[in-house]
Length: 469
Ligand SMILES: Cc1ncc(COP(=O)(O)O)c(C=O)c1O
Image 1: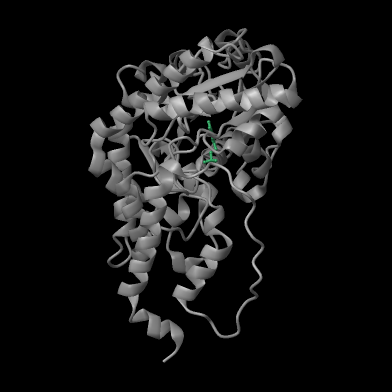
Image 2: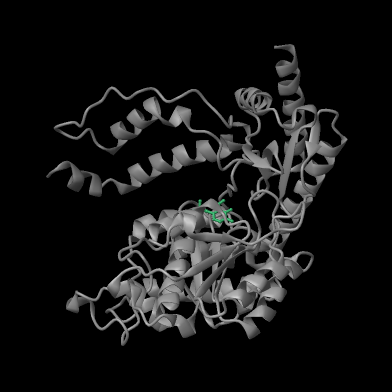
């Protein structure tokens, strides 16, 4: 009997090993540092005869596990890094165990695409979005933006009488945005539309949202040029929102594809206190929402939502047209022909479990709690003698600089390095309004008021060390 077959009879022991390693990670998470020395370079080569799972796991511990940082912990506020709810971890473990490929709802006994479709139904209910949105799961908001913009590209080609999916990219398509996320620009590059091809809409002073009058002027100047409008449902530095209601009004008079990147800002829809920011987004053609951010589902997990009346364009874009064994793309619904990936893991399962486990109420509380924390942290920054808020705290992100060194990149880097060395809190640098800033994004269910105190103490210590250096 070979090793795989032997181990196939020892699942209980192996899964218990994994469970014990997982428990020690999860229990240590609140106290684990947010940065560590680089991992030890492994000195093992590919073995001729395998060592077995238990020995491989201890090799992993020797070389890598000690170097893991608390990126799903309560004080990891860099980028927009969600934690992981207990139900989502259970769902993600089972996703690996079940190892389903959610391609087709018509295949014999294929329940996995049905799970995906039902999860999307719960998802629309959570965000208050109409059933007219169809969707699917992809790896992250980058691929969600990519998917929606690929269908937008097909729509724009159709306006010009050109089937881009078959005949290739054409010129004559206009793309408009005010503050697109870098992943949007990356998607334009991947789609052959060109990352330099964006026309930037003006913004009012101290805002990241678009000036709608300028948008209207651009639309009116060239009403016949097929236009893709990419709007922000929460910008990454200051969580500013484009005016969705005003855009919806313009949609009545001008023809354009309207995409909303609401990777994390879409979660404002979960609380009556913040949902006005998104009013009108239900009229968009496509929406991006990330699950590994504020839904607190493990990487890699996001959703794209595209209005179902665009299904033909979507199938034209993503169909497997040269594989008769995969069926007729338009006649039989299959995810194979609706998204960029063919085979995928069942990303819907952790989402399904966490939505049922915590419900509308649980997620409303999470969003409100994180926004309160961001506001409280913003208040502490405001009172501090060495830090300065660079933008009002609009939702869950706090963007601030070193008060007397706003334009001194070197000083901010020194401060950030000291802070990371202390290991208590992690934030990412950015440039906003001409200032070098740090930004803290609150999207983790584990974060508590104590974490704000610890972070402030750590920042004071780091600043003292920079001054004395
Ligand atoms: C608004 C927005 N869009 C897209 C992305 C890209 O997300 P991902 O890294 O999951 O692909 C992010 C990530 O922070 C974001 O904030």
